[in-house]
Length: 359
Image (cartoon, rainbow, N blue to C red; front, side):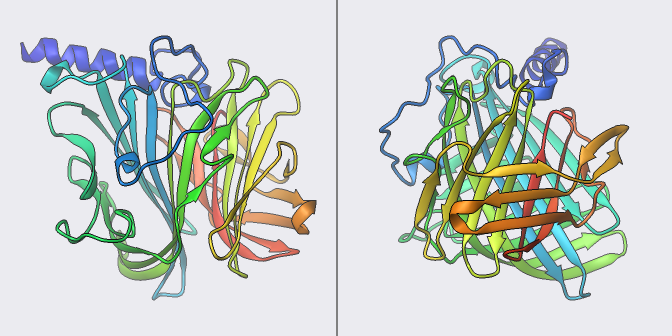
């Protein structure tokens, strides 16, 4: 029986994360394939918190995705990633081993000279991984993002979080405190991903301040900084001809934020962005308002990847150029991608994160 369950789990994970599928460039769960039977995002959805901080099992794919720009007591810059993905082989959920839900965790620390990466896989329904909306807790094995006082009430469930993860050569433990409101991306949280109308439900908490510690091969480092949490779920967020994306989350030194992405296809691609005022007021921008131009490439994992970019947003007077903390910030996971901290300068200055998939 154990061998049958292990075999079933391996087959499920292979199907979910594209281990045996040629369309792996679209990333986790074949995001551009058909999604018959699953729920689809619709305009006019009224978000309800804390319920929407939890899982949505009738949708095929979902994530809790945190990135942090940090500075160590040693004067160096660092980046941290913590991500929990949920994917479903069938809509809905069932108890125990009958659950069609599978979970994938990614964690990383980026330094100027190294990329430390770990990955976890889990089966749903048996307590190994999951998300509880209230009190908020997201976990896979001993990795966790959770409210520090599980009996606390008041405020949003994501306002205060403790974050932890580890790999063979790293560990981190961070405390996050939100200094601004949740932000609905796109039109009231409905984020369009293609001219054909693919979309997701998408909101963020981009206002975290961070304190904590990184444990690295060279020793422990106390850190402070900023973090950004993205929450997104859908069933078919990419069109069939879209091969990957270039996604930016930017913290301007003047207090504003910008989320922007380009989804690559055989043509000019599809771009979208949300301008976030310093007080948290979002301004969704029309497709094409943000121009993303790749610059210098680096040879990363036997492929050429654009690690420097120019971003132009004329309506806000933005013309900036980005540089990575570490050009080799490669996530060597089952579905590999580039992800790491960046700094930018030009008409504005600041820091943020860049994710690139499908290269």
